[in-house]
Image 1 (cartoon, one colour):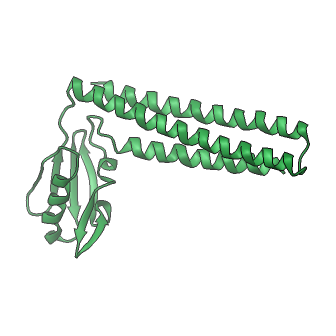
Image 2 (cartoon, rainbow, N blue to C red):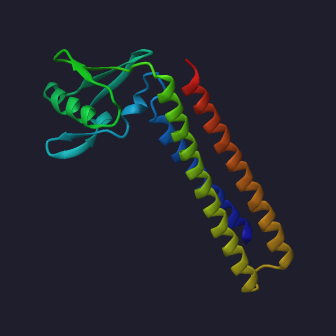
Image 3 (cartoon, one colour):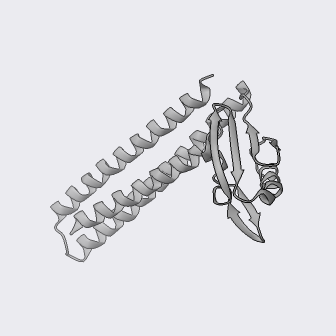
Length: 185
């Protein structure tokens, strides 16, 4: 009975890790990565639309992103959306494609990005711990309602802690990898 609760908590923790990874992917690490543009929306005939839905995004060189819109008249709105974003990159176009040259990161900017990485990872850890807390409360309620024995409750709490520790370790590793990527010149 309590195993279901642990399994559900583990699934939620996995989703939290996926969210943190996705958020970290949108951080600029000195390399051109199409994921940088994931959060940018373009005004597509009055509808806010994800940039990757209005054109093809590619990275032909390590520091260059090329956006080939499916409709040539979308070049203007794409450029506007990129300029409005917090990327800090100026787009250029040749009438067919929009080019983004990703500048090298300064030492100060790298440190700033590392702080952002730590903050995102810490938020992920808080979310994982909240999931653990909710699951623990569910297990305690099962014990109170006499659905499980005290021994089962102890086992469930131990298993839940193991699952939590595993996910927090994974978040630490993801954060360390991203920091290493940012700090490598």
